Image 1 (cartoon, rainbow, N blue to C red):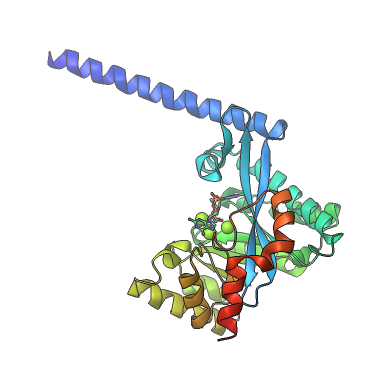
Image 2 (image 1 turned 45 degrees about the vertical axis):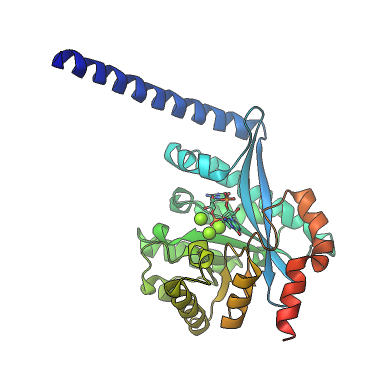
Length: 292
Ligand code: C2E
Ligand code: MG
Ligand code: MG
Ligand code: MG
């Protein structure tokens, strides 16, 4: 009976493995097809400053699947990284974001916007990453100063010297760098000193319970001082309530991104949002705080 049970367990394990492999294989095949068939989309989430200007947008990848509908990046980015597909997908994202910058540059309501693009570890590690980015930007005709690239701390632990070189080369070309999800990885203050980041993004996990969690308050206040002293822009992610906004504003964090202002939007929705933003409740709240 023991042997039979063991065999049964082995059988189940094999089936589970097989399913896992074939799911993964079909995800890979699906993603390749999605790229070829134009099923990826970029949505844009507004970034707002303390006087109520939308100064930029973060480009966030979506997969418009013909059967499964809109799939968020949390579901497929990891698989894209494991299979190497993140490289062609990342190239597509950069081209698309640059094309959007060029389109918006012709629209007086949109021309001032910067676009932030998330870059994954395996993209950054490509030996020709710098060359590729420069070529994409030049071919598109986008202004490099309007493009920001977002990295996370975990990507910085390896090959620090090569990373610094690449970041400096693209900085010299005009692109700026943003450190995403700051505080969630193994941050070393040494990175901040040596890497040419223009911007820190406070991770949303520190913003979520900001009003009630004393450690989160301390961390946010520390990041305000740190970013000032290091001469970096600070932007808070995941701002969902006016209470969070007011707290951040009063502590000196002057840039925000979050559902309070807007969820990530399709291009059409983003363009429709821009002219009516000043009528929104979030905008009024910001103005009310400023005149106090
Ligand atoms: P991220 O770069 O930290 O992006 C912010 C995430 O927080 C987005 O999730 C956004 O929709 C979400 N968010 C924004 N405001 C709020 C808020 O107020 N509350 C809450 N709860 N969430 C908020 P999304 O779009 O699902 O993206 C998840 C992650 O996927 C991104 O995190 C980024 O790491 C990755 N990602 C997205 N697009 C790309 C891409 O083009 N390339 C790569 N390599 N990664 C991407
Ligand atoms: Mg990001
Ligand atoms: Mg983030
Ligand atoms: Mg994140």
